[in-house]
Length: 464
Image (cartoon, rainbow, N blue to C red):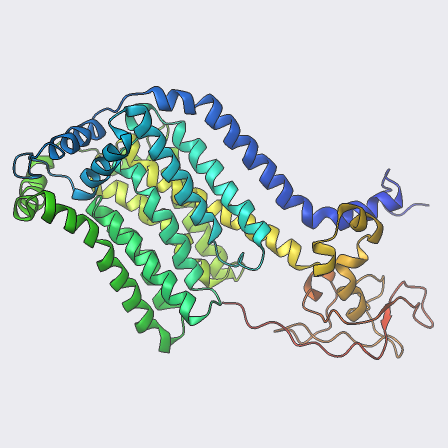
Protein backbone atom coordinates (compact mmCIF):
# COMPACT_ATOMS: atom_id res chain seq x y z
CA UNK A 1 0.00 0.00 0.00
CA UNK A 2 1.29 3.45 -0.87
CA UNK A 3 2.13 5.61 2.14
CA UNK A 4 2.42 8.99 0.48
CA UNK A 5 1.51 10.98 -2.59
CA UNK A 6 3.06 9.92 -5.85
CA UNK A 7 4.28 12.62 -8.20
CA UNK A 8 3.10 12.27 -11.81
CA UNK A 9 6.49 13.50 -13.03
CA UNK A 10 9.28 11.08 -13.92
CA UNK A 11 12.04 10.79 -11.29
CA UNK A 12 14.63 12.39 -13.56
CA UNK A 13 12.40 15.37 -14.26
CA UNK A 14 11.63 15.73 -10.57
CA UNK A 15 15.34 15.73 -9.77
CA UNK A 16 16.04 18.33 -12.45
CA UNK A 17 13.26 20.61 -11.18
CA UNK A 18 14.53 20.27 -7.62
CA UNK A 19 18.03 21.18 -8.78
CA UNK A 20 16.82 24.20 -10.75
CA UNK A 21 14.54 25.57 -8.02
CA UNK A 22 17.15 27.92 -6.44
CA UNK A 23 17.87 29.54 -9.81
CA UNK A 24 14.24 29.82 -10.91
CA UNK A 25 13.32 32.46 -8.33
CA UNK A 26 15.76 35.18 -9.56
CA UNK A 27 14.79 34.49 -13.18
CA UNK A 28 11.09 34.84 -12.39
CA UNK A 29 11.73 38.08 -10.49
CA UNK A 30 13.78 39.50 -13.37
CA UNK A 31 11.24 38.58 -16.06
CA UNK A 32 8.33 39.89 -14.01
CA UNK A 33 10.14 43.15 -13.27
CA UNK A 34 11.11 43.63 -16.91
CA UNK A 35 7.54 42.98 -18.07
CA UNK A 36 6.14 45.42 -15.50
CA UNK A 37 8.64 48.09 -16.51
CA UNK A 38 7.91 47.72 -20.23
CA UNK A 39 4.15 47.84 -19.69
CA UNK A 40 4.42 50.84 -17.37
CA UNK A 41 6.58 52.85 -19.76
CA UNK A 42 4.45 52.00 -22.80
CA UNK A 43 1.02 52.50 -21.20
CA UNK A 44 1.70 55.26 -18.66
CA UNK A 45 4.95 56.81 -19.89
CA UNK A 46 3.44 58.52 -22.93
CA UNK A 47 0.72 60.11 -20.78
CA UNK A 48 3.36 61.23 -18.30
CA UNK A 49 5.55 62.81 -20.98
CA UNK A 50 2.64 64.75 -22.53
CA UNK A 51 1.25 66.14 -19.27
CA UNK A 52 2.18 69.78 -18.49
CA UNK A 53 3.77 70.93 -15.27
CA UNK A 54 1.25 72.12 -12.68
CA UNK A 55 1.16 73.80 -9.28
CA UNK A 56 4.55 73.76 -7.46
CA UNK A 57 6.63 72.48 -10.43
CA UNK A 58 5.16 75.21 -12.66
CA UNK A 59 6.04 77.80 -10.03
CA UNK A 60 9.61 76.50 -9.79
CA UNK A 61 9.85 76.49 -13.57
CA UNK A 62 8.94 80.18 -13.68
CA UNK A 63 11.46 80.97 -10.92
CA UNK A 64 14.21 79.17 -12.83
CA UNK A 65 13.27 81.06 -16.01
CA UNK A 66 13.40 84.40 -14.15
CA UNK A 67 16.76 83.56 -12.55
CA UNK A 68 18.21 82.80 -15.97
CA UNK A 69 17.21 86.34 -16.98
CA UNK A 70 18.89 88.11 -14.10
CA UNK A 71 16.38 88.03 -11.24
CA UNK A 72 17.72 87.41 -7.73
CA UNK A 73 16.18 84.40 -6.06
CA UNK A 74 14.28 85.06 -2.81
CA UNK A 75 14.67 88.85 -3.22
CA UNK A 76 13.02 89.58 -6.56
CA UNK A 77 11.12 86.27 -6.44
CA UNK A 78 9.56 85.64 -3.05
CA UNK A 79 9.22 81.91 -2.36
CA UNK A 80 9.11 79.91 0.86
CA UNK A 81 10.45 76.64 -0.54
CA UNK A 82 13.97 75.29 -0.14
CA UNK A 83 16.53 76.26 -2.81
CA UNK A 84 17.38 72.84 -4.26
CA UNK A 85 14.05 72.70 -6.12
CA UNK A 86 14.95 76.01 -7.81
CA UNK A 87 18.43 74.69 -8.60
CA UNK A 88 17.08 71.50 -10.18
CA UNK A 89 14.68 73.39 -12.45
CA UNK A 90 17.43 75.88 -13.33
CA UNK A 91 19.79 73.03 -14.23
CA UNK A 92 17.13 71.18 -16.23
CA UNK A 93 16.36 74.40 -18.11
CA UNK A 94 19.96 74.58 -19.27
CA UNK A 95 19.63 70.95 -20.44
CA UNK A 96 16.56 71.72 -22.54
CA UNK A 97 14.04 71.46 -19.73
CA UNK A 98 12.23 74.61 -20.79
CA UNK A 99 10.28 72.15 -22.94
CA UNK A 100 8.05 70.27 -20.51
CA UNK A 101 8.41 66.99 -22.38
CA UNK A 102 12.20 67.20 -22.08
CA UNK A 103 11.81 68.06 -18.41
CA UNK A 104 9.73 64.92 -17.85
CA UNK A 105 12.30 62.77 -19.64
CA UNK A 106 15.13 64.14 -17.52
CA UNK A 107 13.12 63.54 -14.37
CA UNK A 108 12.24 59.96 -15.36
CA UNK A 109 15.85 59.21 -16.32
CA UNK A 110 17.15 60.43 -12.95
CA UNK A 111 14.49 58.42 -11.13
CA UNK A 112 15.45 55.21 -12.96
CA UNK A 113 19.17 55.79 -12.34
CA UNK A 114 18.78 56.60 -8.64
CA UNK A 115 16.43 53.72 -7.91
CA UNK A 116 18.69 51.33 -9.82
CA UNK A 117 21.63 52.40 -7.65
CA UNK A 118 19.51 51.76 -4.55
CA UNK A 119 18.76 48.21 -5.70
CA UNK A 120 22.40 47.60 -6.57
CA UNK A 121 23.63 48.40 -3.07
CA UNK A 122 21.09 46.40 -1.11
CA UNK A 123 23.04 44.52 1.62
CA UNK A 124 24.24 40.93 1.29
CA UNK A 125 24.00 40.95 -2.51
CA UNK A 126 27.54 42.17 -3.17
CA UNK A 127 28.85 38.66 -3.80
CA UNK A 128 26.45 38.02 -6.68
CA UNK A 129 26.41 40.41 -9.61
CA UNK A 130 23.41 38.58 -11.07
CA UNK A 131 21.35 39.11 -7.92
CA UNK A 132 22.36 42.76 -7.77
CA UNK A 133 21.13 43.24 -11.33
CA UNK A 134 17.88 41.45 -10.50
CA UNK A 135 17.37 43.60 -7.40
CA UNK A 136 18.07 46.81 -9.31
CA UNK A 137 15.65 45.85 -12.05
CA UNK A 138 13.01 44.87 -9.51
CA UNK A 139 13.22 48.13 -7.56
CA UNK A 140 13.18 50.21 -10.75
CA UNK A 141 10.14 48.37 -12.10
CA UNK A 142 7.92 48.63 -9.04
CA UNK A 143 8.88 52.20 -8.06
CA UNK A 144 8.56 53.60 -11.58
CA UNK A 145 5.28 51.77 -12.19
CA UNK A 146 3.75 53.05 -8.97
CA UNK A 147 5.06 56.58 -9.60
CA UNK A 148 3.63 56.76 -13.11
CA UNK A 149 0.24 55.56 -11.87
CA UNK A 150 -0.15 58.83 -9.96
CA UNK A 151 -2.29 61.60 -11.43
CA UNK A 152 -0.03 64.00 -13.40
CA UNK A 153 -0.90 66.90 -11.10
CA UNK A 154 1.00 65.09 -8.33
CA UNK A 155 4.12 64.36 -10.40
CA UNK A 156 7.42 66.29 -10.56
CA UNK A 157 6.83 67.45 -7.00
CA UNK A 158 9.62 67.73 -4.45
CA UNK A 159 8.42 64.54 -2.76
CA UNK A 160 8.96 62.64 -6.01
CA UNK A 161 12.40 64.19 -6.46
CA UNK A 162 13.26 63.09 -2.92
CA UNK A 163 13.27 59.51 -4.20
CA UNK A 164 16.45 60.36 -6.13
CA UNK A 165 18.31 60.90 -2.86
CA UNK A 166 16.53 58.98 -0.09
CA UNK A 167 16.36 55.55 -1.74
CA UNK A 168 20.10 55.31 -2.55
CA UNK A 169 20.92 56.78 0.88
CA UNK A 170 18.83 54.15 2.68
CA UNK A 171 20.36 51.30 0.68
CA UNK A 172 23.90 52.64 1.21
CA UNK A 173 23.25 53.01 4.95
CA UNK A 174 22.18 49.39 5.22
CA UNK A 175 25.11 48.32 3.02
CA UNK A 176 27.53 50.11 5.35
CA UNK A 177 26.27 48.02 8.28
CA UNK A 178 27.07 44.79 6.44
CA UNK A 179 30.41 43.01 6.73
CA UNK A 180 32.10 45.59 4.50
CA UNK A 181 35.73 46.72 4.72
CA UNK A 182 36.41 49.88 6.70
CA UNK A 183 37.14 51.94 3.58
CA UNK A 184 33.90 50.86 1.88
CA UNK A 185 31.93 51.55 5.06
CA UNK A 186 33.36 55.06 5.31
CA UNK A 187 32.53 55.84 1.69
CA UNK A 188 29.03 54.41 1.99
CA UNK A 189 28.24 56.43 5.11
CA UNK A 190 29.64 59.64 3.65
CA UNK A 191 27.63 59.12 0.46
CA UNK A 192 24.45 58.28 2.37
CA UNK A 193 24.83 61.37 4.55
CA UNK A 194 25.46 63.58 1.51
CA UNK A 195 22.30 62.29 -0.18
CA UNK A 196 20.23 62.95 2.94
CA UNK A 197 21.73 66.45 3.08
CA UNK A 198 20.66 67.08 -0.52
CA UNK A 199 17.13 65.88 0.30
CA UNK A 200 17.04 68.25 3.29
CA UNK A 201 17.68 71.24 1.02
CA UNK A 202 14.79 70.03 -1.12
CA UNK A 203 12.37 70.06 1.85
CA UNK A 204 13.64 70.27 5.46
CA UNK A 205 11.31 67.46 6.58
CA UNK A 206 13.30 65.01 4.46
CA UNK A 207 16.22 65.33 6.85
CA UNK A 208 14.30 62.97 9.17
CA UNK A 209 15.14 60.15 6.75
CA UNK A 210 18.62 60.22 8.26
CA UNK A 211 17.20 58.95 11.56
CA UNK A 212 17.01 55.27 10.43
CA UNK A 213 20.62 55.47 9.26
CA UNK A 214 21.82 56.96 12.55
CA UNK A 215 19.85 54.41 14.59
CA UNK A 216 21.39 51.60 12.55
CA UNK A 217 24.90 52.96 13.11
CA UNK A 218 24.39 53.32 16.89
CA UNK A 219 22.71 49.92 17.35
CA UNK A 220 24.31 47.52 14.87
CA UNK A 221 27.99 48.46 14.73
CA UNK A 222 30.43 47.50 17.51
CA UNK A 223 30.87 50.07 20.27
CA UNK A 224 34.36 51.09 19.19
CA UNK A 225 33.13 51.94 15.66
CA UNK A 226 29.88 53.78 16.41
CA UNK A 227 31.25 57.27 17.06
CA UNK A 228 33.42 57.33 13.96
CA UNK A 229 30.61 56.02 11.76
CA UNK A 230 28.15 58.59 13.17
CA UNK A 231 30.65 61.37 12.45
CA UNK A 232 31.03 60.14 8.86
CA UNK A 233 27.26 60.24 8.45
CA UNK A 234 27.01 63.76 9.87
CA UNK A 235 29.93 65.06 7.80
CA UNK A 236 28.33 63.66 4.68
CA UNK A 237 25.06 65.39 5.58
CA UNK A 238 26.81 68.74 6.00
CA UNK A 239 28.57 68.30 2.67
CA UNK A 240 25.23 67.52 1.00
CA UNK A 241 23.83 70.92 1.93
CA UNK A 242 26.66 72.80 0.18
CA UNK A 243 25.31 72.70 -3.43
CA UNK A 244 22.02 74.40 -2.50
CA UNK A 245 23.87 76.87 -0.28
CA UNK A 246 26.28 77.72 -3.08
CA UNK A 247 23.39 78.16 -5.54
CA UNK A 248 21.65 80.57 -3.15
CA UNK A 249 24.81 82.58 -2.53
CA UNK A 250 25.54 82.93 -6.27
CA UNK A 251 22.05 83.45 -7.72
CA UNK A 252 19.94 84.43 -4.73
CA UNK A 253 19.83 86.10 -1.35
CA UNK A 254 20.53 83.87 1.65
CA UNK A 255 19.09 86.25 4.32
CA UNK A 256 15.86 86.60 2.33
CA UNK A 257 15.59 82.83 2.02
CA UNK A 258 16.04 82.32 5.75
CA UNK A 259 13.36 84.92 6.50
CA UNK A 260 10.91 83.60 3.92
CA UNK A 261 11.48 79.93 4.64
CA UNK A 262 11.63 79.90 8.42
CA UNK A 263 9.61 82.98 9.47
CA UNK A 264 6.97 83.79 6.85
CA UNK A 265 6.56 80.21 5.65
CA UNK A 266 5.31 78.64 8.92
CA UNK A 267 2.99 81.61 9.50
CA UNK A 268 1.56 81.34 6.00
CA UNK A 269 0.95 77.57 6.07
CA UNK A 270 -0.41 77.51 9.62
CA UNK A 271 -4.00 76.29 9.48
CA UNK A 272 -4.12 75.98 5.67
CA UNK A 273 -5.34 72.65 4.31
CA UNK A 274 -4.90 71.02 7.71
CA UNK A 275 -6.29 67.50 8.00
CA UNK A 276 -6.56 65.31 11.11
CA UNK A 277 -3.99 62.55 11.31
CA UNK A 278 -6.68 59.86 11.42
CA UNK A 279 -8.24 61.14 8.19
CA UNK A 280 -4.87 61.00 6.44
CA UNK A 281 -4.10 57.45 7.58
CA UNK A 282 -7.61 56.14 6.89
CA UNK A 283 -8.11 57.87 3.54
CA UNK A 284 -9.55 55.18 1.22
CA UNK A 285 -8.31 56.90 -1.93
CA UNK A 286 -5.07 56.05 -3.67
CA UNK A 287 -2.19 56.29 -2.88
CA UNK A 288 -2.87 56.63 0.86
CA UNK A 289 -2.99 52.84 1.27
CA UNK A 290 0.81 52.99 1.05
CA UNK A 291 0.87 54.77 4.42
CA UNK A 292 -0.82 51.79 6.04
CA UNK A 293 1.44 49.41 4.12
CA UNK A 294 4.52 51.29 5.33
CA UNK A 295 3.50 51.16 8.98
CA UNK A 296 2.60 47.47 8.71
CA UNK A 297 5.92 46.68 7.00
CA UNK A 298 7.91 48.38 9.77
CA UNK A 299 5.95 46.66 12.57
CA UNK A 300 6.19 43.23 10.96
CA UNK A 301 9.87 43.72 10.10
CA UNK A 302 10.77 44.71 13.65
CA UNK A 303 8.87 41.70 14.97
CA UNK A 304 10.84 39.40 12.66
CA UNK A 305 14.03 41.17 13.73
CA UNK A 306 13.21 40.53 17.38
CA UNK A 307 12.56 36.85 16.64
CA UNK A 308 15.92 36.51 14.86
CA UNK A 309 14.43 35.92 11.41
CA UNK A 310 16.04 39.09 10.04
CA UNK A 311 19.56 40.40 10.71
CA UNK A 312 20.12 43.67 12.56
CA UNK A 313 21.85 45.21 9.55
CA UNK A 314 18.40 45.53 7.93
CA UNK A 315 17.34 48.03 10.61
CA UNK A 316 17.59 51.17 8.38
CA UNK A 317 15.46 49.51 5.72
CA UNK A 318 12.88 48.44 8.32
CA UNK A 319 12.59 51.85 9.97
CA UNK A 320 12.51 53.93 6.77
CA UNK A 321 8.79 53.31 5.89
CA UNK A 322 7.60 54.39 9.34
CA UNK A 323 9.74 57.55 9.24
CA UNK A 324 8.41 58.40 5.77
CA UNK A 325 4.84 58.00 7.07
CA UNK A 326 5.73 60.26 10.02
CA UNK A 327 6.91 62.94 7.56
CA UNK A 328 3.50 62.86 5.85
CA UNK A 329 1.69 63.18 9.18
CA UNK A 330 3.92 65.99 10.46
CA UNK A 331 2.99 68.17 7.48
CA UNK A 332 -0.75 67.87 8.38
CA UNK A 333 -1.75 68.33 4.74
CA UNK A 334 -2.15 64.83 3.35
CA UNK A 335 -1.73 65.67 -0.33
CA UNK A 336 -1.38 62.64 -2.59
CA UNK A 337 2.15 63.57 -3.69
CA UNK A 338 3.32 63.53 -0.07
CA UNK A 339 3.02 59.72 -0.19
CA UNK A 340 5.69 59.26 -2.89
CA UNK A 341 8.49 58.85 -0.35
CA UNK A 342 6.62 56.33 1.81
CA UNK A 343 5.76 54.35 -1.32
CA UNK A 344 9.37 54.23 -2.50
CA UNK A 345 11.00 53.12 0.76
CA UNK A 346 8.26 50.50 1.36
CA UNK A 347 8.80 48.99 -2.08
CA UNK A 348 12.57 49.07 -1.53
CA UNK A 349 12.10 47.04 1.65
CA UNK A 350 9.87 44.52 -0.08
CA UNK A 351 12.32 43.99 -2.95
CA UNK A 352 15.16 43.62 -0.45
CA UNK A 353 13.34 40.87 1.44
CA UNK A 354 12.51 39.07 -1.80
CA UNK A 355 16.11 39.35 -3.05
CA UNK A 356 17.40 38.17 0.32
CA UNK A 357 15.29 35.03 0.02
CA UNK A 358 16.56 34.37 -3.49
CA UNK A 359 20.14 34.89 -2.31
CA UNK A 360 19.60 32.40 0.52
CA UNK A 361 18.41 29.81 -1.98
CA UNK A 362 21.46 30.26 -4.18
CA UNK A 363 23.91 30.17 -1.26
CA UNK A 364 22.85 26.59 -0.59
CA UNK A 365 24.32 25.45 -3.91
CA UNK A 366 27.92 24.91 -4.88
CA UNK A 367 29.54 27.61 -7.06
CA UNK A 368 30.13 25.09 -9.85
CA UNK A 369 26.40 24.28 -9.99
CA UNK A 370 25.41 27.93 -9.55
CA UNK A 371 27.11 29.08 -12.76
CA UNK A 372 26.65 25.87 -14.76
CA UNK A 373 24.58 25.73 -17.92
CA UNK A 374 20.93 24.61 -17.65
CA UNK A 375 21.75 21.32 -19.36
CA UNK A 376 24.52 20.55 -16.91
CA UNK A 377 22.22 21.36 -13.98
CA UNK A 378 19.64 18.99 -15.49
CA UNK A 379 22.15 16.15 -15.66
CA UNK A 380 23.64 16.75 -12.22
CA UNK A 381 20.32 16.82 -10.38
CA UNK A 382 19.98 17.96 -6.76
CA UNK A 383 23.22 16.33 -5.61
CA UNK A 384 25.26 19.31 -6.85
CA UNK A 385 23.11 21.65 -4.83
CA UNK A 386 22.73 19.66 -1.63
CA UNK A 387 25.88 17.57 -1.89
CA UNK A 388 27.50 19.09 1.20
CA UNK A 389 24.44 18.39 3.30
CA UNK A 390 24.31 14.84 2.02
CA UNK A 391 27.97 14.26 2.82
CA UNK A 392 28.30 15.74 6.25
CA UNK A 393 24.79 15.08 7.48
CA UNK A 394 24.11 11.35 7.16
CA UNK A 395 20.63 11.78 8.56
CA UNK A 396 19.68 14.58 6.20
CA UNK A 397 18.44 12.36 3.39
CA UNK A 398 17.68 9.25 5.41
CA UNK A 399 14.66 7.88 7.19
CA UNK A 400 16.59 7.42 10.41
CA UNK A 401 18.29 10.25 12.30
CA UNK A 402 20.29 8.06 14.66
CA UNK A 403 23.96 7.65 13.72
CA UNK A 404 25.70 4.30 13.92
CA UNK A 405 29.28 3.19 14.15
CA UNK A 406 29.78 3.47 10.40
CA UNK A 407 27.69 6.61 10.05
CA UNK A 408 29.62 9.41 11.78
CA UNK A 409 27.78 12.18 13.56
CA UNK A 410 27.40 15.39 11.65
CA UNK A 411 29.47 18.28 13.00
CA UNK A 412 27.12 20.53 14.96
CA UNK A 413 25.87 23.60 13.15
CA UNK A 414 26.76 27.03 14.54
CA UNK A 415 24.93 27.82 17.80
CA UNK A 416 23.65 24.24 17.93
CA UNK A 417 24.69 21.36 20.18
CA UNK A 418 22.71 18.66 18.38
CA UNK A 419 23.48 16.87 15.09
CA UNK A 420 22.11 18.64 12.06
CA UNK A 421 19.21 16.81 10.50
CA UNK A 422 18.09 18.98 7.58
CA UNK A 423 19.84 19.77 4.29
CA UNK A 424 19.05 23.49 4.54
CA UNK A 425 21.01 23.91 7.78
CA UNK A 426 24.02 22.07 6.37
CA UNK A 427 24.81 24.70 3.75
CA UNK A 428 27.84 25.70 5.83
CA UNK A 429 29.43 22.26 5.54
CA UNK A 430 32.77 21.87 3.69
CA UNK A 431 32.65 21.44 -0.06
CA UNK A 432 35.65 19.15 -0.33
CA UNK A 433 33.99 16.05 1.10
CA UNK A 434 33.72 12.89 -0.89
CA UNK A 435 30.06 12.21 -1.61
CA UNK A 436 29.89 8.42 -1.51
CA UNK A 437 26.48 7.04 -0.57
CA UNK A 438 26.64 3.80 1.45
CA UNK A 439 23.83 1.98 3.19
CA UNK A 440 24.27 1.88 6.95
CA UNK A 441 24.98 -1.56 8.41
CA UNK A 442 22.08 -3.14 10.14
CA UNK A 443 19.66 -0.62 8.71
CA UNK A 444 17.52 -0.36 5.61
CA UNK A 445 17.69 3.42 5.50
CA UNK A 446 19.32 5.37 2.71
CA UNK A 447 21.75 7.12 5.02
CA UNK A 448 25.07 8.16 3.51
CA UNK A 449 28.51 8.28 5.01
CA UNK A 450 31.65 10.20 4.26
CA UNK A 451 35.20 9.20 3.63
CA UNK A 452 37.98 10.23 5.93
CA UNK A 453 38.46 13.51 4.09
CA UNK A 454 35.23 14.86 5.54
CA UNK A 455 36.65 16.89 8.42
CA UNK A 456 34.63 18.89 10.92
CA UNK A 457 33.60 22.20 9.44
CA UNK A 458 33.83 25.65 10.88
CA UNK A 459 30.60 27.63 10.73
CA UNK A 460 30.23 31.13 9.30
CA UNK A 461 30.67 34.22 11.51
CA UNK A 462 27.68 35.06 13.68
CA UNK A 463 24.94 36.91 11.86
CA UNK A 464 24.40 40.52 12.74
